[in-house]
Image 1: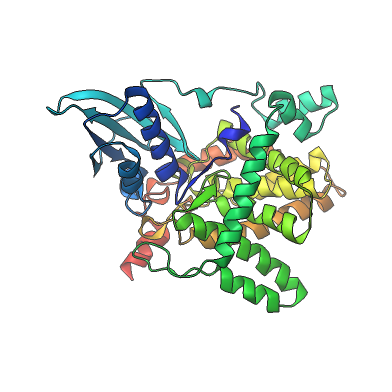
Image 2 (image 1 turned 30 degrees about the horizontal axis):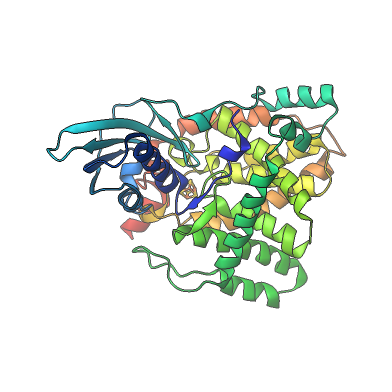
Length: 399
Ligand code: SF4
């Protein structure tokens, strides 16, 4: 498995696959070859079909240090479904350099012509079962397991936590219309006002959802957010961290350990299935985020490693098959509301795991549900995997 740092990345919204990944590729390309006379980028797969709504062309043009033509293409011959050709030219329009870039989920990229160092493997264990064997032999907890391989990760995780809290805070104070033709109004601030007026049972739920709206709306506005595991699903973990910090007053060290716990399960899904909506549907994005937040909330409630695994398993199991059908290609509907529902499902999963584990041992392991998620993702039709050619996206356009 790769570093947890590669799971939690800070970057500009609205989509890790469509903005963060192309931005990273363009930065790497410029570092490798220096400033070139001009550039051309051909987008394929989901990057082509929803790239306009996800601002892919805009971020590419802003990042490359010269004039760039971006085209949205079909008939991609490469093995991975989501990618682009990045080419540079001299003043006589002779090709100088060319990369084939794959956007593999959560802002991560791979490049056909060159290995990328941040894709290096850091953890030898590749399943939760392997992690359990390590933890049993070494009598350690999940955070201790992570510190064994990444002893200096705390400084980075502090910046991640701060970025999450800032993102929610900004979103709670922002008003107006989100960019794009949907003309969608921001709702986090008003939802928060309703939370303050509601009875205690609904108030807590509304607060959590307002936090998720706040982070997701900031992302949809193209502002800075944290992939957890993606930008489209950034509201789930961010809302949990904000709630745990501001409402429960849990100390920073404990929040970082909870982020690490959630990160382990996100990393296992990334390794054994996918965190890309274009590959596995929204189960890979919001499903993974819910699984991560379920584990993190269980950790914050002093759950055992077994209960934490059970929480992560429940979190994913009940979102299996969730499709990706963003209206107009914008990371807004159903994405923002889905993040808000996601945080409530995560809390439920953690509570259920801690109580059910007193009654019986769970039969479905986290590793099994990840395998199921991967196979389910392969069966989801392409129209429901971040192409906006099916589901809500299609029905809405027909109305
Ligand atoms: S529906 Fe889910 S996977 Fe698709 S863009 Fe929205 S958050 Fe991402």
